[in-house]
Length: 225
Image 1 (cartoon, rainbow, N blue to C red):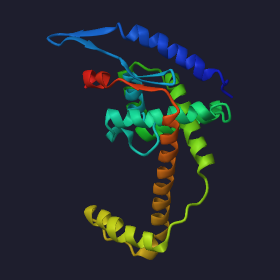
Image 2 (image 1 turned 135 degrees about the vertical axis):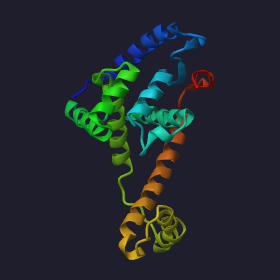
Image 3 (image 1 turned 90 degrees about the vertical axis):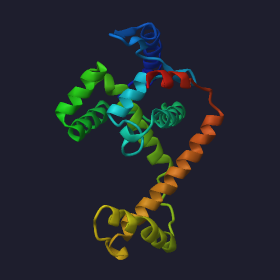
Image 4 (image 1 turned 180 degrees about the vertical axis):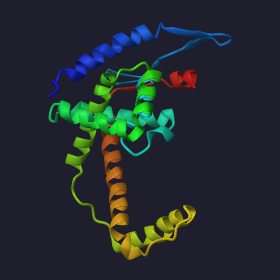
């Protein structure tokens, strides 16, 4: 298993790397000087850089389905939640190299080997450089799965309302004929349970934010765009 000191080492390396990157400038014809990387936030002394957000976007390594459609601000908000949760629970749960390897293979299969390699090359990464980010993703999912594993109650009326107000419209917009409610009952119940679970996770992370030291530097995002 990965040692518990891994995060401290990662943070130390991040700060050292960031100091170097802050002085690294890329110069292009007619473009003047452009900052390549900068500090986006600090979460209990853990630095978050613009580069972190780009890696998380490129390899869809944040909670949720498709991170690529999120704005940089939304990605930062999600990643702050991840870091706050892991700060409290990292000592309790661990990730094995086998789990990291399996997630890496899932990423390759999802993107396709060519696209995976292309994104690594674009960011100047080797695949092993993704280990820390993958660890964070797996740990976060473990924590949420452990803490919020109870089955949440959803009423039949809530299911019927969702079917009429959301599901039917979705299917019609996609050019499909909506299935009968009885055949998608379990699917809709699962959707509503996920929404309730997400709301509880959000409430928990909101409480964690109140006890944390968080500094956000929006000028970094504005410069990079």
